[in-house]
Image 1 (tube, rainbow, N blue to C red):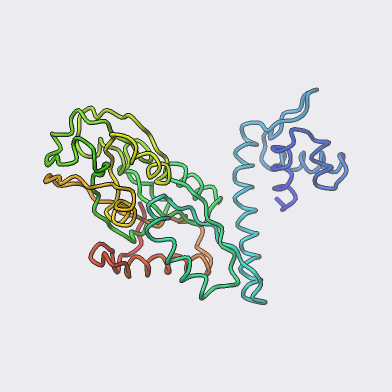
Image 2 (image 1 turned 60 degrees about the horizontal axis):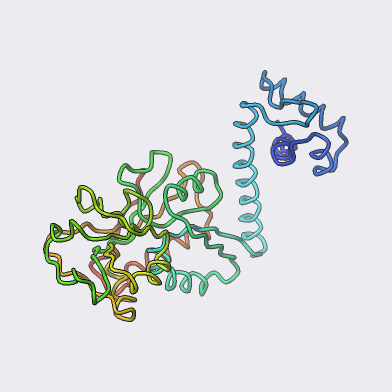
Length: 307
Protein backbone atom coordinates (compact mmCIF):
# COMPACT_ATOMS: atom_id res chain seq x y z
CA UNK A 1 0.00 0.00 0.00
CA UNK A 2 1.23 3.49 -0.89
CA UNK A 3 0.37 6.94 0.40
CA UNK A 4 -1.54 7.61 -2.83
CA UNK A 5 -3.88 4.76 -1.90
CA UNK A 6 -4.68 6.44 1.40
CA UNK A 7 -5.38 9.74 -0.36
CA UNK A 8 -7.52 7.85 -2.85
CA UNK A 9 -9.80 6.40 -0.18
CA UNK A 10 -10.28 9.79 1.46
CA UNK A 11 -10.96 11.50 -1.85
CA UNK A 12 -13.70 9.01 -2.74
CA UNK A 13 -15.22 9.38 0.72
CA UNK A 14 -15.30 13.16 0.31
CA UNK A 15 -16.41 13.47 -3.32
CA UNK A 16 -18.57 10.39 -3.90
CA UNK A 17 -17.23 10.21 -7.44
CA UNK A 18 -14.26 8.57 -9.16
CA UNK A 19 -14.07 11.40 -11.67
CA UNK A 20 -14.13 14.10 -9.01
CA UNK A 21 -11.57 12.16 -6.96
CA UNK A 22 -9.25 11.97 -9.98
CA UNK A 23 -9.53 15.73 -10.45
CA UNK A 24 -8.89 16.38 -6.76
CA UNK A 25 -5.80 14.16 -6.79
CA UNK A 26 -4.62 15.50 -10.17
CA UNK A 27 -4.46 12.06 -11.80
CA UNK A 28 -6.30 10.54 -14.73
CA UNK A 29 -9.43 8.55 -14.04
CA UNK A 30 -7.96 5.34 -15.59
CA UNK A 31 -4.91 5.68 -13.31
CA UNK A 32 -7.18 6.15 -10.30
CA UNK A 33 -9.30 3.15 -11.26
CA UNK A 34 -6.17 1.03 -11.65
CA UNK A 35 -4.93 2.08 -8.22
CA UNK A 36 -8.30 1.22 -6.71
CA UNK A 37 -8.25 -2.26 -8.31
CA UNK A 38 -4.76 -2.82 -6.92
CA UNK A 39 -5.92 -1.83 -3.45
CA UNK A 40 -8.97 -4.12 -3.62
CA UNK A 41 -6.80 -7.00 -4.82
CA UNK A 42 -4.45 -6.40 -1.89
CA UNK A 43 -7.26 -6.56 0.65
CA UNK A 44 -9.27 -9.20 -1.18
CA UNK A 45 -12.58 -7.39 -0.92
CA UNK A 46 -14.67 -4.63 -2.45
CA UNK A 47 -13.75 -1.25 -1.04
CA UNK A 48 -15.82 1.03 -3.29
CA UNK A 49 -19.31 0.45 -4.64
CA UNK A 50 -19.89 1.99 -8.07
CA UNK A 51 -23.26 2.95 -9.54
CA UNK A 52 -24.73 5.28 -12.13
CA UNK A 53 -25.04 7.91 -9.39
CA UNK A 54 -21.37 7.82 -8.48
CA UNK A 55 -19.20 5.90 -6.06
CA UNK A 56 -19.37 5.35 -2.33
CA UNK A 57 -17.28 3.43 0.13
CA UNK A 58 -18.29 -0.13 0.96
CA UNK A 59 -18.21 -1.09 4.66
CA UNK A 60 -14.64 -2.34 4.31
CA UNK A 61 -13.73 0.88 2.53
CA UNK A 62 -15.15 2.97 5.35
CA UNK A 63 -12.98 1.09 7.83
CA UNK A 64 -9.91 1.65 5.68
CA UNK A 65 -10.71 5.33 5.13
CA UNK A 66 -10.90 5.90 8.88
CA UNK A 67 -7.46 4.37 9.33
CA UNK A 68 -6.16 6.25 6.30
CA UNK A 69 -7.20 9.60 7.77
CA UNK A 70 -5.46 8.82 11.05
CA UNK A 71 -2.32 7.58 9.27
CA UNK A 72 -2.05 10.68 7.09
CA UNK A 73 -2.49 12.94 10.11
CA UNK A 74 0.32 11.10 11.91
CA UNK A 75 2.59 11.41 8.87
CA UNK A 76 1.89 15.12 8.64
CA UNK A 77 2.64 15.54 12.34
CA UNK A 78 5.88 13.65 11.85
CA UNK A 79 6.86 16.03 9.07
CA UNK A 80 6.04 19.04 11.26
CA UNK A 81 8.07 17.69 14.16
CA UNK A 82 11.09 16.83 12.02
CA UNK A 83 10.90 20.23 10.36
CA UNK A 84 10.79 21.87 13.76
CA UNK A 85 13.84 19.95 14.93
CA UNK A 86 15.75 20.75 11.77
CA UNK A 87 14.77 24.35 11.05
CA UNK A 88 12.69 25.46 14.04
CA UNK A 89 9.81 26.27 11.71
CA UNK A 90 6.29 26.60 13.02
CA UNK A 91 4.81 23.47 14.62
CA UNK A 92 1.19 22.99 15.62
CA UNK A 93 -0.53 21.52 18.69
CA UNK A 94 -4.30 21.06 18.91
CA UNK A 95 -5.81 20.74 22.39
CA UNK A 96 -9.42 20.18 23.38
CA UNK A 97 -10.47 21.95 26.58
CA UNK A 98 -13.48 21.45 28.81
CA UNK A 99 -15.13 24.60 30.20
CA UNK A 100 -13.54 24.06 33.64
CA UNK A 101 -10.03 23.55 32.28
CA UNK A 102 -10.41 26.52 29.93
CA UNK A 103 -11.40 28.84 32.77
CA UNK A 104 -9.26 27.54 35.62
CA UNK A 105 -6.05 26.42 33.90
CA UNK A 106 -5.79 27.61 30.31
CA UNK A 107 -4.99 31.34 30.79
CA UNK A 108 -1.85 30.73 32.82
CA UNK A 109 -0.83 27.53 31.03
CA UNK A 110 -1.14 29.00 27.54
CA UNK A 111 0.82 32.10 28.56
CA UNK A 112 3.50 29.92 30.16
CA UNK A 113 3.71 27.71 27.04
CA UNK A 114 3.75 30.62 24.59
CA UNK A 115 6.55 32.32 26.46
CA UNK A 116 8.84 29.32 26.00
CA UNK A 117 7.53 28.02 22.65
CA UNK A 118 6.63 31.12 20.60
CA UNK A 119 7.20 29.29 17.31
CA UNK A 120 4.48 26.72 18.03
CA UNK A 121 0.98 27.44 16.76
CA UNK A 122 -1.59 26.45 19.38
CA UNK A 123 -5.10 25.53 18.27
CA UNK A 124 -7.67 25.40 21.11
CA UNK A 125 -10.94 23.51 20.64
CA UNK A 126 -13.92 23.67 23.01
CA UNK A 127 -14.92 20.09 23.70
CA UNK A 128 -16.14 17.72 26.39
CA UNK A 129 -16.55 13.97 26.66
CA UNK A 130 -17.78 11.87 24.97
CA UNK A 131 -16.93 14.02 21.94
CA UNK A 132 -13.46 14.85 23.30
CA UNK A 133 -12.52 11.18 23.61
CA UNK A 134 -13.66 10.46 20.05
CA UNK A 135 -11.58 13.40 18.78
CA UNK A 136 -8.47 12.12 20.57
CA UNK A 137 -8.94 8.61 19.20
CA UNK A 138 -9.45 9.91 15.66
CA UNK A 139 -6.37 12.11 15.87
CA UNK A 140 -8.41 15.28 15.34
CA UNK A 141 -6.85 16.74 18.49
CA UNK A 142 -3.51 15.90 20.08
CA UNK A 143 -4.88 15.82 23.61
CA UNK A 144 -7.95 16.66 25.66
CA UNK A 145 -8.01 18.29 29.08
CA UNK A 146 -11.10 17.97 31.25
CA UNK A 147 -13.15 15.64 33.47
CA UNK A 148 -13.75 12.00 32.55
CA UNK A 149 -16.85 9.81 32.60
CA UNK A 150 -17.34 7.69 35.70
CA UNK A 151 -16.92 4.47 33.73
CA UNK A 152 -13.45 5.47 32.52
CA UNK A 153 -12.12 5.81 28.98
CA UNK A 154 -10.66 2.47 27.90
CA UNK A 155 -7.12 1.11 27.78
CA UNK A 156 -6.31 2.66 24.41
CA UNK A 157 -5.95 6.11 25.97
CA UNK A 158 -3.39 7.50 28.40
CA UNK A 159 -4.86 9.45 31.31
CA UNK A 160 -3.01 11.82 33.63
CA UNK A 161 -4.82 13.67 36.45
CA UNK A 162 -3.61 17.25 36.78
CA UNK A 163 -6.06 19.16 38.98
CA UNK A 164 -8.57 18.40 41.69
CA UNK A 165 -11.16 20.92 42.88
CA UNK A 166 -14.01 20.79 45.37
CA UNK A 167 -17.43 21.21 43.80
CA UNK A 168 -19.96 23.60 45.31
CA UNK A 169 -23.65 24.26 44.71
CA UNK A 170 -24.35 27.80 43.58
CA UNK A 171 -27.40 29.97 43.07
CA UNK A 172 -28.21 33.65 42.86
CA UNK A 173 -28.17 35.40 46.20
CA UNK A 174 -31.93 36.03 46.20
CA UNK A 175 -32.75 32.35 45.62
CA UNK A 176 -35.31 31.05 48.17
CA UNK A 177 -33.01 28.08 48.90
CA UNK A 178 -29.79 30.08 49.23
CA UNK A 179 -29.47 29.04 52.91
CA UNK A 180 -30.20 25.34 52.42
CA UNK A 181 -27.85 23.17 54.50
CA UNK A 182 -28.79 19.65 53.40
CA UNK A 183 -29.09 18.05 49.99
CA UNK A 184 -32.49 16.82 51.09
CA UNK A 185 -33.60 20.45 51.22
CA UNK A 186 -33.04 20.64 47.45
CA UNK A 187 -35.36 17.77 46.53
CA UNK A 188 -37.85 20.16 44.92
CA UNK A 189 -35.33 22.63 43.55
CA UNK A 190 -35.00 23.51 39.87
CA UNK A 191 -31.54 22.47 38.69
CA UNK A 192 -29.23 23.43 35.87
CA UNK A 193 -27.32 20.57 34.23
CA UNK A 194 -23.87 21.71 33.09
CA UNK A 195 -22.09 19.46 30.62
CA UNK A 196 -23.06 15.88 29.77
CA UNK A 197 -25.59 13.79 31.67
CA UNK A 198 -23.80 11.69 34.27
CA UNK A 199 -20.92 14.15 34.43
CA UNK A 200 -19.71 16.28 37.34
CA UNK A 201 -22.27 18.98 36.56
CA UNK A 202 -25.21 16.57 36.73
CA UNK A 203 -27.21 16.75 40.00
CA UNK A 204 -27.61 12.98 39.74
CA UNK A 205 -23.95 12.81 40.84
CA UNK A 206 -25.12 14.07 44.24
CA UNK A 207 -27.24 11.00 44.81
CA UNK A 208 -30.53 12.79 44.18
CA UNK A 209 -33.13 10.36 42.88
CA UNK A 210 -35.10 12.54 40.50
CA UNK A 211 -33.74 16.09 40.32
CA UNK A 212 -35.84 18.53 38.34
CA UNK A 213 -33.70 19.71 35.43
CA UNK A 214 -34.97 23.08 34.26
CA UNK A 215 -31.97 24.17 32.24
CA UNK A 216 -29.12 22.47 30.36
CA UNK A 217 -25.88 24.36 29.62
CA UNK A 218 -22.95 23.05 27.64
CA UNK A 219 -20.69 25.90 28.70
CA UNK A 220 -19.98 27.95 31.78
CA UNK A 221 -20.39 31.08 29.64
CA UNK A 222 -24.07 30.28 29.16
CA UNK A 223 -24.35 29.38 32.83
CA UNK A 224 -22.91 32.75 33.86
CA UNK A 225 -25.34 34.57 31.60
CA UNK A 226 -28.48 32.78 32.80
CA UNK A 227 -27.95 31.76 36.42
CA UNK A 228 -28.15 35.28 37.91
CA UNK A 229 -31.61 35.70 36.37
CA UNK A 230 -33.21 32.36 37.24
CA UNK A 231 -34.15 30.51 40.42
CA UNK A 232 -32.02 27.48 39.62
CA UNK A 233 -29.22 25.80 41.54
CA UNK A 234 -26.21 24.20 39.91
CA UNK A 235 -22.91 22.43 40.55
CA UNK A 236 -19.66 24.20 39.76
CA UNK A 237 -15.98 23.94 40.74
CA UNK A 238 -14.97 26.03 43.75
CA UNK A 239 -12.28 27.81 41.73
CA UNK A 240 -14.82 28.78 39.07
CA UNK A 241 -17.21 30.19 41.66
CA UNK A 242 -14.48 32.06 43.53
CA UNK A 243 -13.47 33.80 40.31
CA UNK A 244 -16.86 34.73 38.90
CA UNK A 245 -19.58 34.13 41.49
CA UNK A 246 -19.26 37.32 43.55
CA UNK A 247 -19.16 39.48 40.42
CA UNK A 248 -22.52 38.10 39.32
CA UNK A 249 -24.25 38.20 42.70
CA UNK A 250 -24.09 34.42 43.05
CA UNK A 251 -23.66 32.57 46.32
CA UNK A 252 -22.72 29.06 47.39
CA UNK A 253 -25.25 27.12 49.41
CA UNK A 254 -23.90 26.15 52.87
CA UNK A 255 -24.47 22.44 52.23
CA UNK A 256 -23.15 20.30 55.09
CA UNK A 257 -23.32 17.02 53.17
CA UNK A 258 -20.14 15.85 51.47
CA UNK A 259 -20.05 16.98 47.85
CA UNK A 260 -18.07 15.27 45.07
CA UNK A 261 -14.84 16.71 43.74
CA UNK A 262 -13.96 17.59 40.17
CA UNK A 263 -10.80 16.07 38.74
CA UNK A 264 -9.37 17.38 35.48
CA UNK A 265 -7.28 14.98 33.39
CA UNK A 266 -5.06 15.10 30.34
CA UNK A 267 -6.04 12.42 27.81
CA UNK A 268 -3.95 11.34 24.83
CA UNK A 269 -3.65 8.32 22.54
CA UNK A 270 -1.70 5.34 23.76
CA UNK A 271 -0.55 4.32 20.27
CA UNK A 272 0.75 7.72 19.15
CA UNK A 273 3.31 9.45 21.40
CA UNK A 274 2.83 13.17 21.87
CA UNK A 275 5.11 15.43 19.90
CA UNK A 276 7.68 17.35 21.88
CA UNK A 277 5.68 20.62 21.75
CA UNK A 278 2.50 18.79 22.78
CA UNK A 279 4.27 17.24 25.77
CA UNK A 280 5.57 20.64 26.78
CA UNK A 281 2.01 21.97 26.64
CA UNK A 282 0.97 19.22 29.05
CA UNK A 283 3.85 20.26 31.31
CA UNK A 284 2.58 23.85 31.24
CA UNK A 285 -0.90 22.74 32.36
CA UNK A 286 0.57 20.60 35.13
CA UNK A 287 2.72 23.51 36.32
CA UNK A 288 -0.25 25.87 36.23
CA UNK A 289 -2.35 23.44 38.27
CA UNK A 290 0.43 23.13 40.83
CA UNK A 291 0.84 26.88 41.09
CA UNK A 292 -2.79 27.83 41.66
CA UNK A 293 -3.56 29.56 44.92
CA UNK A 294 -5.80 26.60 45.76
CA UNK A 295 -2.50 24.76 46.36
CA UNK A 296 -3.81 21.61 48.07
CA UNK A 297 -6.33 21.07 45.27
CA UNK A 298 -3.57 20.45 42.77
CA UNK A 299 -2.52 16.90 42.12
CA UNK A 300 1.26 16.98 42.24
CA UNK A 301 3.50 14.25 40.99
CA UNK A 302 0.71 12.18 39.45
CA UNK A 303 1.83 9.46 37.06
CA UNK A 304 0.29 8.78 33.70
CA UNK A 305 -1.96 5.75 33.46
CA UNK A 306 -4.25 4.07 31.03
CA UNK A 307 -7.95 4.58 31.70
